[in-house]
Image (cartoon, rainbow, N blue to C red; front, side, top):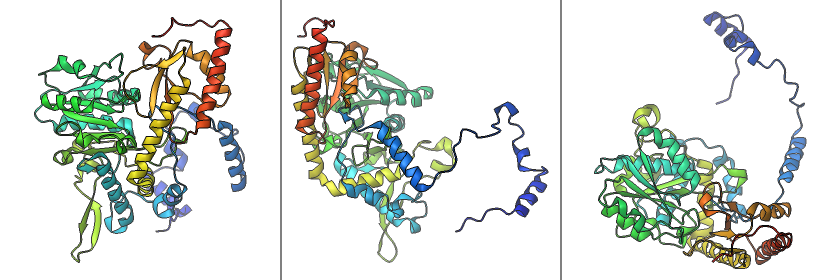
Length: 465
């Protein structure tokens, strides 16, 4: 349908009908001091070529630093075909597929995404995606409260080893809904959440337990023991996982005797570039018995009366969209374009390809930890880790890292703000995109900086054990 703007006569008739002389009168409630009389700072219009050149120059100012930061967003290789296909007009401009007869391509793609995610997570059901990983955990928390009908409380055990941003986001969303998030400390030596730390809650009414795999420190949790403890105490299990890691590690659906109940996480590692922080997308899977409590869209596969395969939105209560007080969620944004990229990425790479990526990430991080380790820097925790690890420095990190930034290196994520008890600690990550030369470059720069700092008499903490 073409867009036909209003004519002057149309505008005049509408203004006369509502009794105002001109359009400006519609905004007369805005105080004069808040109005912008002119736009002197807005530059003259540029041609397409000039805009492209300007944006290229702006992008170049960011540079292309060698990045060893993970902390929830990861630099992975993305096959060129992924975004060539994703940005085709059919996908790039597609809207919410409410009209199934006009959206079969989009619906089929989402159905394939759901099928891949359930296979990867060993779960029964997946939705069509959520806003991001952090809000997905908040949604899972609300879902668990609804789904665990045996629990009379609104308490969730949330380990402090879960991503800090996820914990903050979840608190912001559920705090005013009378849901109590109970912090569970991590083990000082292993960096994991031990079953012993849950023992004080034995026999208490707990609605759900959150388990991250790997956790924010990259440490692998004892997911079987934690899952079985939760179920033995009548709590649901909410798994927060890295999708790439699940191609290598035991998937949530197989944790313990009965598996996790709800699985969420950040989908960015599946074909989505870092893009200065987003947009990304969240995913959610669950057991079949809880599907009615799952927020967001779900696409189903069926056949029409002629026996032809068709796809449509299913299990969607209308109040999800028009009766907000009865909706399972009010922020169930479907990140369709990012899901398109993730689906194409998984289809191209395949299950074995994802597993090889995970193995390469793990191997590179182990190499990096070995190369950086010395009398001043050591591995902080003694548990197995996936593709990031915490290093503790005997020298002040600010002084060590500043020269590395100057050499176009992003050396890692400082933990002092989120975990002050860890002192001078750095979370480092090396994915499959890092070569041996990249790792050596980081080691050599770090070695030179340490030598300069120690030679200059920089204060050193007592020798580390």
